Length: 136
Image 1 (tube, helix red, strand yellow):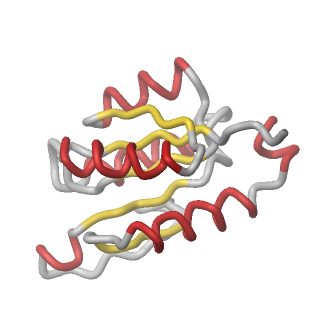
Image 2 (cartoon, rainbow, N blue to C red; image 1 turned 90 degrees about the vertical axis):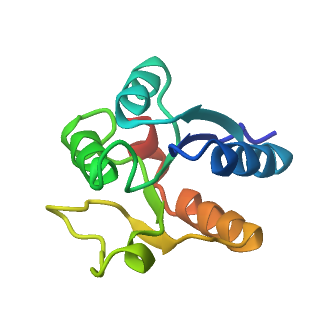
């Protein structure tokens, strides 16, 4: 039997968190949540997830970017897949895209995201994590 994958869902929108937590749990993911960057880092220290879903705009407009850079700088979280789900590209006059320095996430998708798409993206991201990297 395959071990349940652990997802950390980080967003300041409680409705978004509740809805997607329920969706992921219905599809056999173990989900824990955080509502800001500080909580995110605390949760990661408690239990390493297999995947982290981050919002961009929380307490500040670039909190998700700051957290992604912190996570990439830590040895134990450097290889954990980071999925950013944000509405920043539709609410601000900018076009954010992942990059190694400023926004080191693996994928960025726009809110709102259809549940089927979210599940497909998560499944694909978890499939591409080499086992030795995920454990090491």
